[in-house]
Image 1 (cartoon, one colour):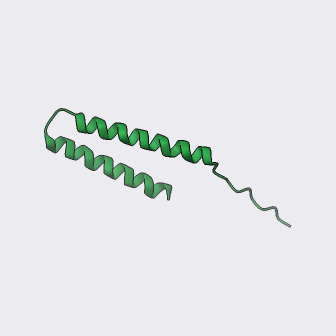
Image 2 (image 1 turned 180 degrees about the vertical axis):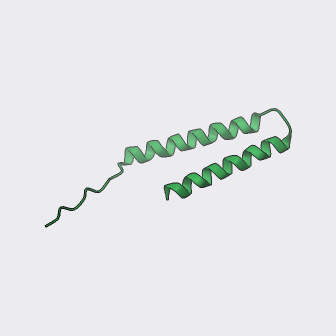
Image 3 (image 1 turned 30 degrees about the vertical axis):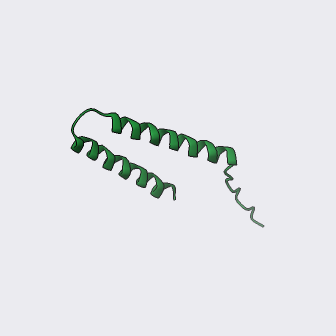
Length: 62
């Protein structure tokens, strides 16, 4: 018989740490973009970049 390959298991602590670090980093970047001095079109461009990065991260993680 061939041995079954080991399955990777994600612990709850790892999941919580990953979710919290994602939330903190997202909040920090959101705050930084909101407080950025400059024109609104510059902030809008950064918002779109942030949105694209977050959706890409979810797509890759899926």
